[in-house]
Length: 438
Image 1: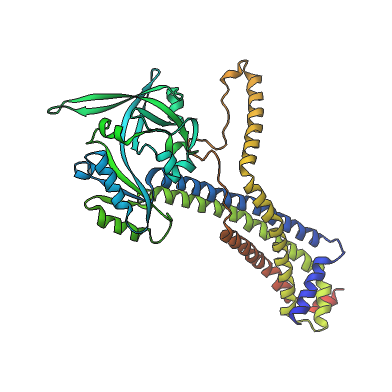
Image 2: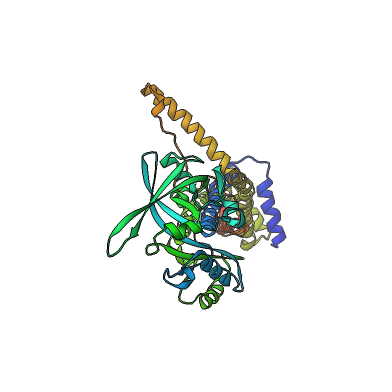
């Protein structure tokens, strides 16, 4: 029995006009595989988009590709001009596309009788327009990013909500200053809020206050602040990043040089392991769905025992019969893929709209139940499927074609494995025993 004969018999099994329990079970198995692929593909695309979006914001807005931590006592950090010139010198390293100097410190932020801790970042005054990451990843809720005035600040949206601030309001920052001896006194500065920004990931920018670099030199305490030069390369994930980092180290002198993955290794590993765990759970669902192919083929073999016996009596080989049933199982898996893949991609591409719809529906039902139990609906708190404090407010969608190909190939292999037992059993059918019972 040739492969062509096995293929023809497999097509007969698939296209037979007879409506049997085995065929119905095979269609059900195909449907189950398709349905199981939808959440798997959606989780893959959403997790990839979520991780790339968060990591992209951490790199572009916080650490950049390479961070150079400079001692506050060296000559390069004594004033704005020297620090800026030092940054230009590092930007001339091969592979570095740009960079900016920054002073990072902490302060107490106060306004309208509210107080909270804040991370103060003294940056160049034109950074929101000249830096590619700042201009593309930050969204201005109010005001603008102009830091031309030494007493102008741009703050994060969460900080503005906590302090009930709007563009044009006054913000008081309090740090410490060391006087003669060991006496430490508070140092206060009042800034006008020029703009309120959000990067879409509240956990990252919740406490950020941006002030001009010149104001950082005069206001932030030198001892407790960090002087950092942040450098961008062409590709944050390039294998050349470590090589560029070593070249920067040679030119940076006694400064400490770190790449973004060294500074965020634990967080990046946490994201990756969470994604792998979610995919494994979804793969188990596909595995369970593929087992249905095995049970469906067992039923088809039982229904076709007489037919198999006649074929073997006419010269069909056990291998040929086995191959025919394997082809039927793989065809069922391929049918599930053809159904589940487009549906999964459709769900993934529209995940933001789907989440918004489900969230509105849940809030409407929840508020209705709340109003049945309480008279005042003003105290009702809305439900958020993705808490903006920990997740991106808008999930960027990226289609990982390589991983999708692996999923399709894996599904077909699972279908082949699930088909192997009933297919081998069909190949081992003894025609004389079957025909005697007819």
